[in-house]
Image (cartoon, rainbow, N blue to C red; front, top):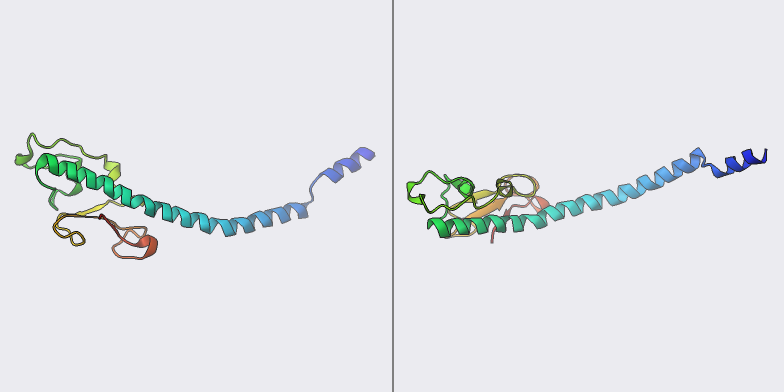
Length: 145
């Protein structure tokens, strides 16, 4: 008889388990938004270095080929030699892995040969979290310097 009572005292009741589940759920409700906000910030922090890698590859392309890719060639010129006879023997690519032509939100990085933000040079643009032009905060467009 004594053993049964001892076993009963050691077990959790349904109410105790429900209280613990509610407490864990409440903690999750407070912590989860902060974690997801940090993930958004982390992607934002990764966008500029990714643009810098593409910028470096464009500079190497320009050193070897004597020019930057034009708008029709785009960033694909860093992966595959453009159909330009003047580049025969000069192109020394690929200059970058294809996966690095995507921003942290898996959207292709845009290239504009005639820069609007960088006049006299080129623009590299990550569209941000909203994957569309414009936006604010995490959704803001990110340009190369």
